[in-house]
Amino acid sequence: MPHPLVALALSMASTLGSAPAPAAAEPAVRYEPAGSPGAEQARRLLQDSGALRTGIRLPEPVEVVARDCGEPAATWDAGQRRITICYALVDEVRRTLDGISTTEEADDRTAERRVEAALAALYHHQLGHALATMNGLPAGGEGQADQLAALTLAADRPADAVPAAEARHLLAAGHGGLDHLKGTAESATFGCLLYGADPAANAAIAKGGWVPAQRAPSCAAEYERVRAAVGSLVVKGP
Image: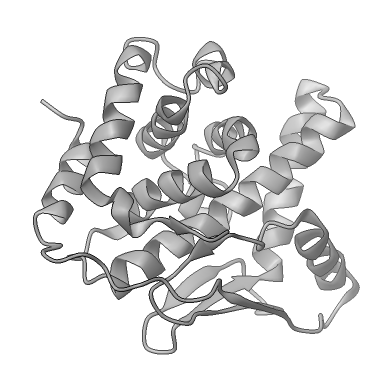
């Protein structure tokens, strides 16, 4: 019996029918001016991290806007074909993970990589929503976006797989506006798919306990089932 979110991918696949439309150019990214020193710090962090750079191609043009929304949010607007990342959410991610890293006495580079990878995971989650919408998948909610995020992240930013799984695990309990990264079951599935994408390179995910020990041996098979179901939607440019 496949995991519930893997079963979701299989049901999604049954509705795809013909091959997806040819992929368009990569999303166009725009950083709007910040309205406060804190928002400006978040803007610089987001831009310098490169979290919004991707080689993933989408079936239709998509605009990615980073802006000062006044609230910690990240959204996909299907009507406008727009992903919005709010500077307040970037700041919430940074403050939360910095606090955890301080408590753990993690070194500066570890703390920095956690934040960068968490921002990449947030962005790829929104890319997952965009891919689902534009390819006509049935509404699958956050679990569907998570599965596609794991596939796109593994294809686009394999070096971020381990820190993304770690950051997601650390944030799983839910903090402030970090709704897209909360949930222990969701965190385990996200980590399992990233681990399963390359168990050798991503062995730290299993060793760190970010996937339940009893589930880790099945992660490669879980990843392959999801990739077989919806992996054709994940197109990486040259």
